[in-house]
Length: 217
Image (cartoon, rainbow, N blue to C red; front, side, top):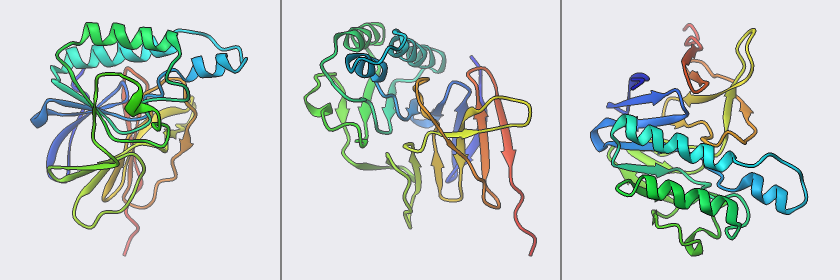
């Protein structure tokens, strides 16, 4: 297993994984954001020609991460769905994923694309708009919290390194960590680091850490 990048968030040992996931060893829990199940299927249903199989590949990646880390649960920080919840292609991929990971608990924080999630019949736990867990507040979109470190997604952060293509990235801020979009079929928001912030680019195989020094004085 790729051990990823070990670090502490709000005093809690965590690991950033190169395949766009955060692992919480004390809870044996994977945290991912912005799964966007069926996004390409929704586009194809609207007459836009796109390759198929993206959802199946994303779910296979998630199953591989669960096996390699020994995670007993996976919490998704919003945007499980993208558009229609009744399209057969991605639902078959989801069924195959659940058959491959029957013991993995799946829980979800509501995202802005998840209006149809409650009635989608996906066998997962719905956590509401936000949940407090240990030193963290887990939610979909970034926000400030006076008492807890926020773990979230929504922004799809990406980082452009000299001579390399844009890559999904974790955005580590003083009181908020933004996870990259887990789905491979997503756009991204370029990160502009403020003083003292860190970005960690991840391309599925490696992690590259970029820091912006704290301003003097």
